[in-house]
Image (cartoon, rainbow over all chains, first blue to last red; front, side):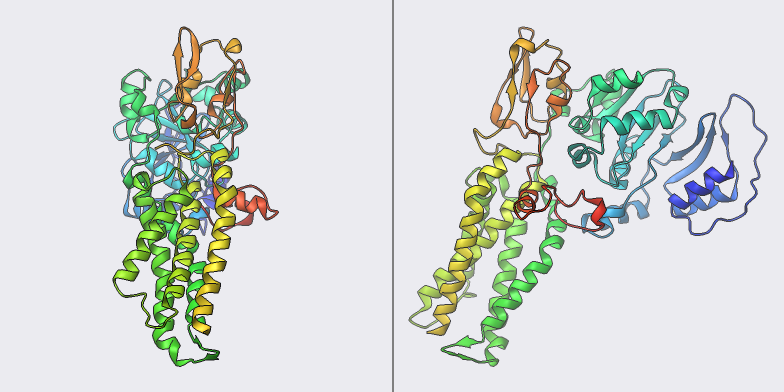
Length: 391
Length: 98
């Protein structure tokens, strides 16, 4: 019996197993028993979001808290900044909140810990089962598109945890955004469980359940509010950081070119400024485009990004950060304009993958003209800027 | 928020539709309504090609070429890799994208 707990412990990042013997209280046949065991203690110590581990006829079921701990919030924050984002996962199995019985609802989610935390933090006061699918630590929406939050995984896990022996009803509640991976009629055919699609947002689950599993049309529509857009900025920043720093360094180094010579002293003045221009263009592209998204002109994101770049170019010019006094200054200006807008247009286009409002066909359509244009603009801009320095 | 018009591959064959309403339930963009016992497309340009409708249509009346609306994924595909975001790519370990 402890072998199962030990292997759970290994998955739950328990570094050492403690005692090999269990001190189990005598069972009564019908009621679940809280297990007292060295392995359990270890699991719970390294996973404080688990309140206790119940022993059920079908196996061990961790009962999880509905209140988030500081360690949970830190984990979410880290993932948002790209730290340990690809390995932020929990064991795919059956969990519980509160004191669920055989008539309590079953809520399905992914084994990305952020998804799991968002779900359970919206279940305070409820008695429910949580069925966590193995999506390799990816959230429901992405995993559904990818296929891992899918019919096969759901059907197989239902059998693995012996759900038919845990609940007397035959329904599972799947988040609506999992529907692109789950075929409800196929699940019913294969394992006899009926899929009910719950609301898009976990915060609506309690109302959904108390309304007899009915959702309003607001609950069924996905939104992309300012907050929902802004929260995606940190990860976009981290992903593009190294390419931007390289480009900024490139421009800083090229700033030593003046006439047909190279003056390293210029790096300290113009080099810094020109590197900064690249960083500013990047920051505005990554922050302003998502923030102002619905109000920026154009439907395609590359066009929206272009407008952000145009605005930042004007700001840089008016503030005197881009400045010059040679006859060739207009050429340098033109070069800068093309460089800046091609960067912000590209960054805007890249934001398409982070949204619930873009279609594959639409993105392909916009990329057909956007990518060549961005390449041409950037290259031409760089050349013109260089030439203005050479002459 | 609307994206690009006249682009999506969404298709609805009314003859096969049984009016079960699953497409209305699962669509995250409110593309469908049921009218006179059949599904109707309210606004085709709202569709994001997630594929939930096709996956949950028992009669096969709705079809769409589902895929990820992600520029990064398409760029990867163009440069010879898999057309995948890269963020769902657990085999490569760490990384990128949305």
